[in-house]
Image 1 (cartoon, rainbow, N blue to C red):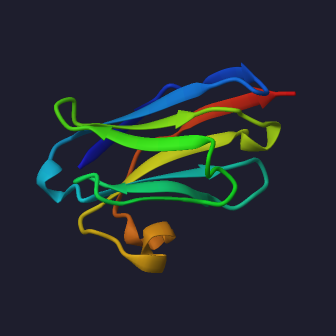
Image 2 (tube, rainbow, N blue to C red; image 1 turned 135 degrees about the vertical axis):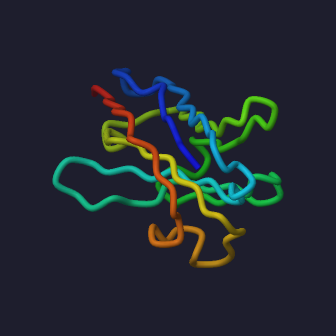
Image 3 (cartoon, one colour; image 1 turned 45 degrees about the horizontal axis):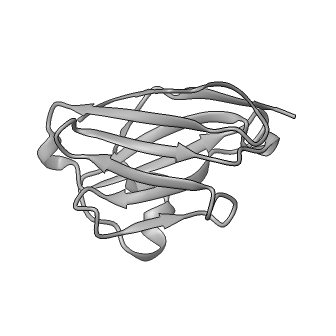
Length: 126
C-alpha cells in the first residue's frame, strides 16, 4: 500500500485545516488507517484512527472534539478534518495503514501500522 499525505500548511490558532491521505497499490490490505504526528524535539504520537469500513473511530484525548477522521471510499482517501487548531497542534502529520482491523490499545500503537506516508507539515501560529 502506498500513501500520499497532503493538505498541511500554516494557519492561525482557532483556524481549520483538512489533511488527506491518498492510498494506492494493494488497497485490499487497507483495514485500519491512522494519523500520527511528531512535533519538533518530541516523539511521534497517535492522533486518530478509523477502520476502513467506517465502523470504528478513535481519538487521542488531545484532539477529541476538535478533529474528525473519515474516509472517502470512491476516492481511496482518508481525511483528517482539524478544527479549533492550537499552537500545540504544530507538527508533521503522518498517515499510516494497518493490514488488519485494530482493537483496543493496538489502535494507537505505531508498530501495528505497516505502511506510512511521507508526512505533511502543519504549523499553527498563535
